[in-house]
Length: 135
Image (tube, rainbow, N blue to C red; front, side, top):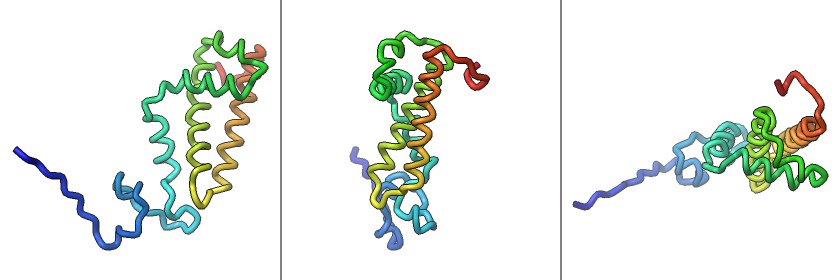
């Protein structure tokens, strides 16, 4: 038995970026975001990438914070693991946004700032500081 998959592309879809056709996503109407995936779609893709996010985030933090490389692997608090997961997703978003042409510079700067904030929180946690956010 032979089965076929037929992809029907309508005339108005010929100029759409490939990622919108593959995922069946609507085009953005905003001129700045035209041709780019929606931010929430990018985040969903990162969260569901199959990457062990805690381990990958921990490794990225070790690279970003060389002075704390020895402390990072030994921190197993739930709050720190959550921070590692969020850091990995955010760093993956930065990677994806850097690849875009044209670059959405404002969104990229926002995610880079989030990464710096997470790094600062990681340093504070590793130094034994307390915060209501980490309970």
